[in-house]
Amino acid sequence: MSLVSSPNLKRKSKKLKKNKRKSEKSMKGPSQKWGYIRIITGTIGGGILGFYVMHRLETNYKEKMNERLRIYEAELNRKKQEKLNEFEESS
Image 1: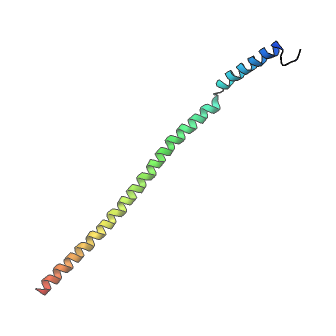
Image 2: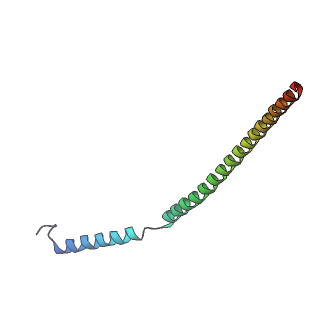
Image 3: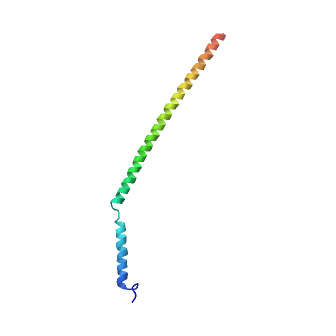
């Protein structure tokens, strides 16, 4: 009688496989729980940081564009005044 075909050995190997599957399912211990917590907090923290950075970029860009608009409008008004002065002097 060989060991492979022994009925006791077959039963034991089936039992070991069954226990192994059970232990794999119940291995969600503290390390996996902390892993999930780290992923969730990282996602939320990254979202907040990304929102803050984009907000800062947008406000800085808006301020820069407003400043450029003020300079452009001042230049237009200056040119308009020069044309009016030229027209008044020529007439």
